[in-house]
Structure formats: structure tokens, C-alpha cells
Amino acid sequence: MGVSRRGPYQPHLLPGVPLVRAVGPIVGAELEEHDNPDEIDHVLIRMDPGEEIVVAVNTLSKRNRLAGFDSRVRVGMVRGTWDVLPEPGADICGRMDYADIESQTNVFYEHMGREELEILLMESCFRACLLEVWGAPYHQRRQGIHQIHSRRASCAAAEDITGRDGALKFYFEEARATLMLLFKFCGQP
Image 1 (cartoon, rainbow, N blue to C red):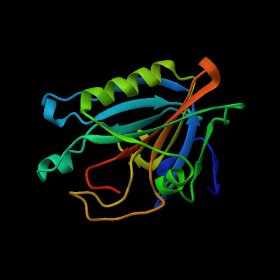
Image 2 (image 1 turned 120 degrees about the horizontal axis):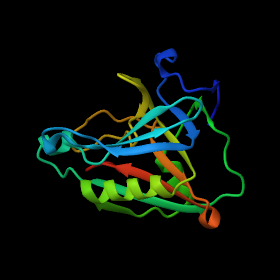
Image 3 (image 1 turned 60 degrees about the vertical axis):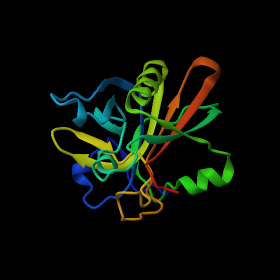
């Protein structure tokens, strides 16, 4: 992954940047709130790679559900260990592709419903000492990263983007363990 900018995460200064990588401690995590439970489809993780940002992680695919397909997320878990924690900060990424990871390790994807995925994410946030995230920058009410999933075509989305996948990697003090989470929707290879 090439780095062309390092420092505090500033997506509003990065027009047209398709992919970023950020590393920092987790400040907090919460379930998305909405009056209509059918509209809830994210866990919002606040992290600090130099300034606080929000990482929006899909817990289901509303697009697939509305098109009559399976709305669950398929989650791949890659476990490892760390010797040295990565430095906090943010950079522009040249590439992140699940195919590269899958070619180096056996990744088994498990279907998870919204509530099951919410529990996995919240527990990981609670235990982690650091988070590394890949995704697309956005700026609405707050700066953040979204598109934390495969960008390949799915049952309900024809656009097929390679090399721009989003992922999470949690770093834990306990046993110096890591947990990388890869997310796919119905129909994604």
C-alpha cells in the first residue's frame, strides 16, 4: 500500500480519494440509533488517528434486503499476532484487496445477522487497544470512514470495484493478538 499523505485524518481535504487507512486508539463505539429499527444497519466506532473520526461499519445490507436478497453480512476472520503496534495516523492507500489476503491465508466467511455482528464488533472494540481501518473517506456531520466491506459486485449492486476493499483490524494487549475482519454481502466473490 502506497502512502502519499501521513498525519491527522482530513477527508474533507482529500477530494476524490478512493481509499484511506487509519490507525488509532478506539475512543468509543455505539449502535446506530433510529426510530425505525429496520433502518439500523451500522455500528459507529469513534477512533483517534490524530483527531477523532467515526468509522461506520455495516451490520446488514439494506440494498440487498430491498431487492429481495439475503441482507446478512458474511464475515471473514483472520487471526494473528503483533510484535510492534503500528503508529497512529492516516494515509491514502493505493490498494486493499481481499483477494490478496485470501491468497495468503484460508479465510472462512460466516453469515452473521445484524445483532450477532453488533455483538462481535462491540466486544472487539471494548477489548482492543488499537484499531486499523481501511475504507472510503466521508464528511457529513463528522469526518469518518465508511465502505468497510468488499467493493465487488453483489446481488443488488452491479458496480464491481477491485483493490478498494475496506476492513478492520483490532489489536489486543492479551496475547498480543490481532483480529482482522473482512465483510462481504450476498453475491460477492
